[in-house]
Length: 150
Image (tube, rainbow, N blue to C red; front, side):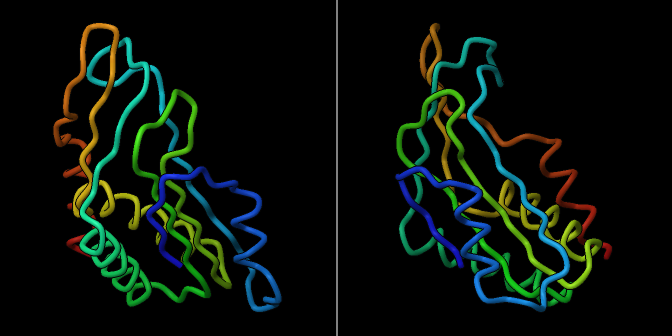
């Protein structure tokens, strides 16, 4: 399940939907990204996320498909918010279900690394000193490169 949406999501409800009626799942690993009050500047007050509808979902589907080829996964749920977000709001949820924990942990990590470097989202942070577009991070690119060898 892949969704790009402006409305908030609730992690517990997302897990309930993922597990509903399933008895073949032995592990669920999830990552939830939140809006924090610092990044490139220390006074972040919120952020806005933009995307290209259709293109973004297709990109996320490709990332999920690659994870499903690498690990034996029972289910994957990716929810990414767009629009204006406040401090503490959830931005992204990646939830992986597998028979075993290692596959779930690795697939979750992989999807987040590739989401940060391959998915077409643009983030503008709003601060007390002005707004700015967030630049691509070298550390995100390094994290994603580790999957190229495996």
